[in-house]
Amino acid sequence: MLAAGLLARIQTLASRHAFRACDARHVSDTGHRSHLPRAPKVASAKVREVAMKRRMLVSWAATAVVAVVTAGCGSESPTGPAAAGGVVVQGVVLGKGASVSAADTQAPASSAKKVTVKVEGTSLTVDVSASGTFQFTGIPRGTFTLVFLADGVEIGRVVVSAAEGSEVKIVVQVTDSTLVLVEIKVENPGDSEDDDDTAGSSCVVNGGKAGERIELEGNVASGSSAQFYLTATGRTSSDVLVNAGSASFKCIGSAKTTSDSQCRDSVRGGARVHVRGALMSCAPAVVTASEVKVQK
Amino acid sequence: MRGGRVLAPAAILGVAASLADAAPRTAAPARSNAPGLFAGYSHTEAGDASLHGLGLSGSYPLGAALSLVVDISGHDGSFAGADLGQLGLMAGARWSPSSGRLRPFAEGLLGGVRTSVSVDLGGASISDADTDWGLALGGGLDYGLNRRWALRALVHVRLLHGEGAWDTDPRLAVGAVFRLGR
Image (tube, rainbow over all chains, first blue to last red; front, top):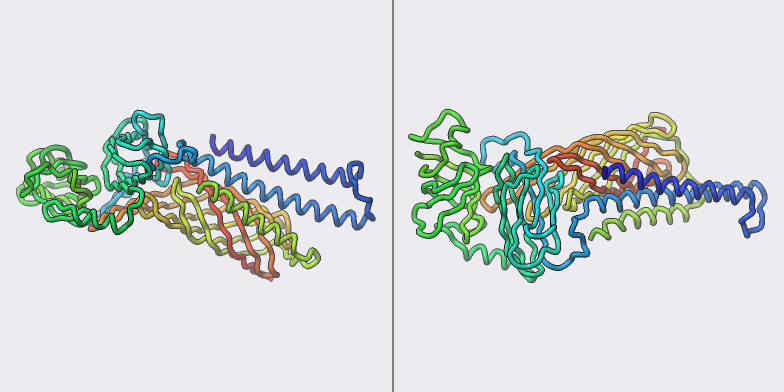
């Protein structure tokens, strides 16, 4: 429908310019509306030729510009630039084919479901683009919830707290029916890269710093192979949320299974696991896993 | 930012038009439709992300005004902390009615665009790649410098389907054309 509208607008403009060009030729031929003295026929023909070339050029230029303008309108965020201020959210959605660099295999294709993101309690809604990006502008500051839907069915929520003028950068992964938070950064106005690094290094979980590699061992408290809470050995505070939608799974020792899917199914409450990945944040403690070894 | 994106092609086409006006009208290096190679800077939007890169294309004449076109483009950039790369391969037809110094053209191409996304998580990285299929419609202007070389500005609107969604992404390229043949 958008494509049809785009073509219609281009065709309308092109035909309008074509009409003007023909009209100009007619005027020049008859001289009825011309205020210039009539030139000899040969010179007049050259003038007409040059005028036609120029009009043709203008027509092409205008058509091309309108094509870009129309395309820009088509992919515009519904919040629009007029809604400047508030909080900006930029996001990337990875499909189920996403792989972690340490993984042995890579699934061939990503989800073909249409993903939509809403800001709960507002009318702000965007469709995730074919390239996996989305953007909101003008979200009121404070705490808000991003609701992710795949083909209209809710698959997950992310609660964000951000100050006025903040920019939230979020990366999630959508599998068949689940949402995995891969990364989230809230950049406040005036923050610099150095500030971010300092903040990361001051935050430690079980010896691992935020943004760096971490290895944890413990028991699965709840959840499934895509996402589970881990009661980590040596940690007395809250459980660690492990996003393992993109991780490779290995079942070893007494937990050994014959297939990858059986191994994934064995990740349930009480399972003993060793997790290798990256620590995304400390409060709450979130780890994106690249490898999960199920021990029993 | 959106305004700038829209004004950029207009400015480039305006400059091309000025050059055309300034050119001596009797010295047009008229050449018939000849095979040509194009290379230049290319900018595109991938959903909400702005990507920059290189555009390459080759054309082979099928008639006085019609050519077969193969277009390859590579872009990259970052968005929301993720690195995006896009490789496009499209082929189709170009119609160029003029053979003078200034040659406007229109073209329609079919093909695919492979988009890869990678997120660096410090110790590990997550990557995803997906191919979207679609078409590109657009046109541009060649300004002949001599019998072999020309400057080109072109605008495409790429209609791509993937992940259950249709994207309407503009693409702009400027560069040089080398004409082959006699």
